[in-house]
Image (cartoon, rainbow, N blue to C red; front, side, top):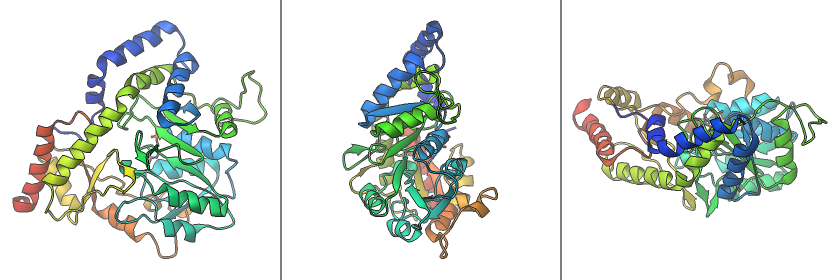
Length: 369
Ligand SMILES: Cc1ncc(COP(=O)(O)O)c(C=O)c1O
């Protein structure tokens, strides 16, 4: 079986460092926050090029806490995309604000810049651009609109740890960047985890208090908070893996190149790489008129493809009536939802298995239908 992603292969390739880290934390007796979390926060801030990093319980919490720390809540609108993980919208709901969903650009699959402009109202407070599949959003355009309308920018970097835009790490461009360390992510934990990065000291300080009941350093509060702490085991594991994140992303890019040359000429739309962006290929998502048939064909050959974002946010029953969608709808998002198929991609996927995926996709188009 060639899986879509393989946290197990990730563990095995880092086993010595991870086992050491776990043993060290077990022997330290400090299992929540503390020294290991602070070390990882420092290393991750340096990695991203921000002043602050605050470890939290998940990527969803990272987004929700960053929004709350910017005073965004009930009565406010937050502009984002529907072509994303449900978590992006769930985090906005958690604050009491309303997600305003705009379409994506068909080539890069990231937020459509004209769509943002059209979605701004007096209630708008923030934009949450999503670096979907590892593709960098056109951040200079997003930041320019935000500046013009006085909006905050919280980058959803859950799928893009290590990616860059115009040479800067994703997460360091907006007011805050939010990461998920869900095990399949480019930097994956062995459990849940998330991070808010920012160079704004007041935003960072507030997230730090909000993640633990609202406590300050003296365990006093002047506002209510939550429990969204990162645990020391996850932090130590992530710190052990961080030095090899760039190498892991380079391997993802090499697999993407192999797929691009192997799949050329087929009736598929292959992922684009935005000029100025460094894609980190969390997903390798192709578009295909027969995506469901191709999915079944690959599954029958033990290849774990998956529909990435097949059900966009505004099509989820639990969310549909609570989000704002433009009058013209979200045609590109709808088309992607019907057509996108993610092929296996993870750093430990070897060339022979990548070639097996290519051969199976080619066989589908030449003889499998
Ligand atoms: C784009 C995006 N945003 C947010 C999240 C939320 O992360 P988590 O699952 O850690 O809460 C995810 C991960 O599922 C994601 O892919």
